Image (tube, rainbow over all chains, first blue to last red):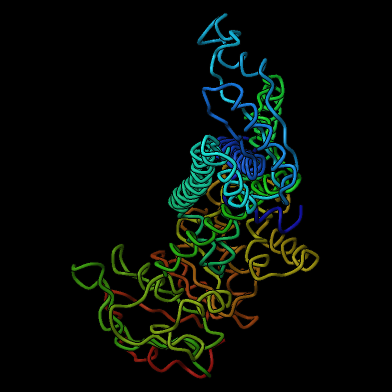
Length: 291
Length: 235
């Protein structure tokens, strides 16, 4: 047996799935879910913002149907001439009737119902919004311009908050992991006090003793990371499948890109690195207080 | 003869109690053999702990290999300890390691490659008569066998000083003779040997060995030879 393998066994023979490995598994599973949630929400927020940016709905609110139609026609003609306008589309009367049918029932199909004329406008960018609004205001005071961005911004803001919350959860998980490793290393030092004393008397340095603990904790973290990572991957695959089945316009933006997956793949590695460093710092710190 | 250990007015106190060791002064010459005797509780183990750097004194001066051991930084201690071999009274073998691996540990701690570890460990096992039990774990060894493994571990690195606390306490008289003979062999190779024992029968077994006697924490040195070791060991 090699010297390294023997030295590794100085602490004890325990291997396989210890309590510490379970803790690491659960911590990593939760961290990966929180991180995936945060990344997914961030991409959804970006997609939503991109989708809403530069989208307007123009309403012509006039009780007189003839005047309303004339104003709508002039507005459409103007919009088609304005620079920065990509697409102009009148919302059909049937579509408007369908939208109000849940409230008005069959009355929604009444031709005398004073429904506003609505025009969907796509702009090349949000910067054209002000010029379009000003030009339309000159056409008629009965024209109102609604920016989609303004009424969806609370949703976007809420999703951004959730992303930050997920990031905070990841940091908390990492802090908790560090605390668990510190406690485990301290407990290990206590239970192996006699062995460490002998190692010191044989001329071991603090770093050599610390290596015994950090290797052990790194193994626990790696094993826990592998199992926790697989469990998290399975959970994410299941949630992805459920999300696809929902076919929701709002939720379709929740997706993980290549960079997101790479970031998630780095989490277990960061976990092992953090656990190893925490164990090393704890052991060396404790040994420095002894002779 | 150069002295490799110097104690000057060393005192040791645990907590706020009385001094366990008081005004201990002596020098150990390189390549000499010393027995440390005294009744139980006289302070033998405490003195050895100071010697093998497991404890710092409350007062006084200790010089090891020409360096001040009292103010020595922690970073220097491992290198100093590697120059010593210690046989603990309670053996302190690593329970999860075989006799072979326990003996090999000081060499591995010192960073020797595995091919340089094998031969000395094999020799040590043969030397203490445990070649057949190389792969036995301490729990399966008798008290005497464990003690021999502990001795082999202490000497495998060819230390400059060998410190043994009651090394014959758990062995029969024949084995005690053999162990003392082993220590003598080490001593002839140039190792300074300090053996703490209350077995007065051992004292006559090593011709030329000097005696240090502790009485209630004070070192008795009626001839002054401990302060000024003789130039040569009598044959």
